[in-house]
Image 1 (tube, rainbow, N blue to C red):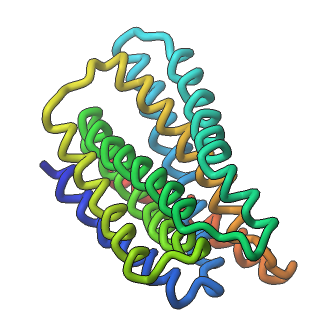
Image 2 (spheres, one colour):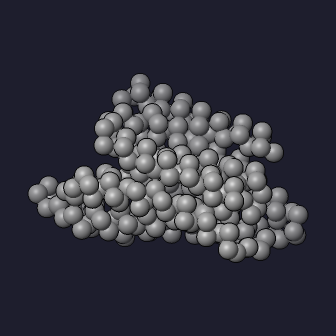
Length: 245
């Protein structure tokens, strides 16, 4: 039940990201840099240590979880490239914007947000400490999801009303995902694979999406501050994980 309650924070975070996209996108670099550090910290200081601790406690080889990490990284890379490939090519033709392309791309982000909620729920099946850490990462990441959902819709000439409706759908999705995990339990060996897969997902989002966006167009002096904020985000999660344990 705690997982579901925390998932409502992702709802607020997603809505906040969408509203931010409508007004302050040009000032987003600093927040994105911190968010990338948060994701890196969750992978390094919570998920990977938890995988190896579970492996030691249950006498399970952790290699499968490391394979799942690579699969998770490559899966979300492929999903993003293939689902959004039409969108990427459309950028080459300024006058050719099709609202349905934005809708399809935004729906892909909604599906991704359902998985975010499932991730929080399954993390609480591992332990409360893991659940809290994953929830913090997802809440930070979902701010960017809200921003991207609105950005994709508006970029393809969808109306503000339609963009707002898609934002609401994206915001509700993690709550539904977290609630679904109340209906089933996952064995320890499967949870290890999940943790590896989710670590690969967070790692991909951090290094391939958020950091490049944060540093896009940044001057050298600004880049130093942005990197410092990334380190601060990772340090924040380090402290959270130490307190949670």
